[in-house]
Each structure stands twice: as structure tokens, then as C-alpha cells.
Image 1 (spheres, one colour):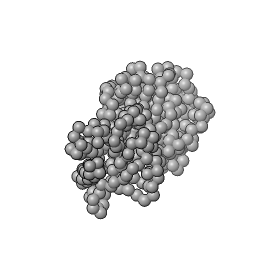
Image 2 (cartoon, one colour):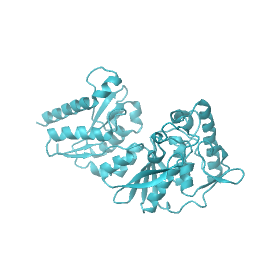
Image 3 (tube, rainbow, N blue to C red):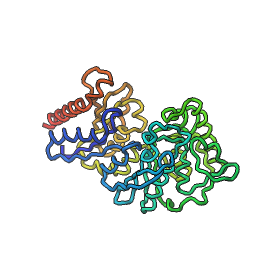
Length: 378
């Protein structure tokens, strides 16, 4: 083999995408000296996404002071790639759950800092901004981020305020007249891998509120607030986002990105593939290695493996999937471009045990795949 492309998802709870690239790349170089190895660690929009893009494409990490989830100053960052044309922002960098530690309360947390990151990137002259949703501590529907770019929210008394999860129900009017013009003409893409609506039993508060610190009573309160926000957005901005898939992501930040930033929501892997110009990257490749912790029916809904396979099929490049486990009912994967699927676990062990053997199991599996490839080539 002369060229191999590595683009695995992380194995949740065990190995990062970058670590998997390192392991597979090392085995490829051992068995095929001189082989060009192109590593593309996959960003899922959550913590570490900026570093994934910078590792894959190079670029600059911009550091700046913004507001944290509790409106306190903090040092945050975003990435600049594509020769300064594209900014990559991860919401978790200033609104992430780890930042609130033992103060989890989605009634009080804000996305204001995310808006500050977006505005700073826009003022640097980029033409595209990629925003990753994931790992948030918030449930404000993106109102905080919107306030940071000049969107005004008023209560029944006509008083201007910055809504949080606990005050979205107080919004009486939304005014875009003072929204910054710095974002005009900039393409904004939001990475979103879930299809939850804004509110309801499968909405932002019910599904994700508990992990952010909401008890059952608070979940209902937050849900009503987001429902009210949806109604005001419809009334003042003319957008019915209530049932749009993905609008419930990250405390309904998905809805806020559409309503206040004019963004489109896109599956994370599609954003990654577009950003790295994947179709060009795989030109001349002998094989593509991808994978995830477990390949199952969910994998067929546009996650990393299938996203990679679909594009590889158009170029006629074989796709090898390495996964922690493989479920039944995944035959469709072969139809869309997967060439073969290999699971790394060598013994029938519980995940609690096998997770600590992930490095050696992955190394062993890839080693054998490459040995077979050498034999067949011979």
C-alpha cells in the first residue's frame, strides 16, 4: 500500500480519535514502510473538536477572554483553519458542563461566551464559521449567545435582559435591529448529531436536562421556558422551529443557531468531510480505515462510518471498519460502501474489563488486518 487514510470516530470511554489514528498509523508504517498515512481525527462538536480540526488541517488556536456559564470572565479559545478563511468553535470551550463543576443549574447558565467567540471570529475576517454543539451546561436556547451579537430580548415591562434557562419564559419580544452586521455574508454551519426537537418528551430539557443538574420539577420548568421561546421566535421572527430535528441540541442551542445566527444544522461527520475536502484527500488512497466503539443500526443514520463510506464509494476506495463491537442488522453498511468490519475484542469480556485492553486489542486487530493485506498482495 502506498497511501492510507485514517478517519475513525472515538471509542467512547476508551480511546480518542487521535489515539486511534496514532495506533493504526504506527502499524501501517511498520508493515508498509514509506506508505503515506493521512490522519484525520474526527471532531464530534464537543470538547476536543477544535484540536481535531487543527491536527488534521493545521492552523492557529486563538485565545481570548469571554464569559463562562455563570457570566464570569474566563480564558477560552477557537481555531482558525483553511488559511484564515474558516473558524472552528466548540461550545464546550466556554459553556461546557465541566466548567460548572458542582454548580450545575441550567436555570442560571448562559451561552453568552459562545456568541463572543463567534463575534471575535467574524471580526477576524473569516468567511465561514463552524460551531460544534456538545457537552453543554446550558438550556437557554442560544439566547445568551444571541445577546452577545446584539440581539435584544425584552420582558412584559419592556425591560431588556439576557435570558437564561430559568428566564426564557419571561421573553415578551425579540428585536434583531441592533444585531451586529459583522456576521453578514459569513456562512455559519452548526455540527449537530442528534435530531431532538426544541421541547416535549424528546426535547432539550427532558432528554438532556437531568445530566445538567435538573431534577424532574426543574425539567418541566425548563421545558415550558423553551416552548415559550419557540412561540416568541415564531411570532417575532416568523420561524416555526418547534419540531425541526436538532433544534433541541445543547439546551436548544440548535434552535438559537438557526433563529439568531442564520446557521444550518449539519451532521458532524458531513461538516468534517466538507471542511477537510475529503473527496480530494482520498484521491489515490489504497484504503480508508474508520471505526467507532460499536457499529449498530444507529451507525446507519449518518454517523462517522457511514458518512465516510458513502463518499469513499463514489471514489472506489475500500473502507475497513474497526470497531469495539458489531451488532446485528448492519448489512446496509456494506451496501453504502463499507468493505469489511472487524471487531477488536478478542475474548468474551464485559466492557468494564475490555475497555482497559483497548490499546492492545486494537493494535492486535489492525496488525492482523495488515498482515493479511500483505499476504494477499503477495
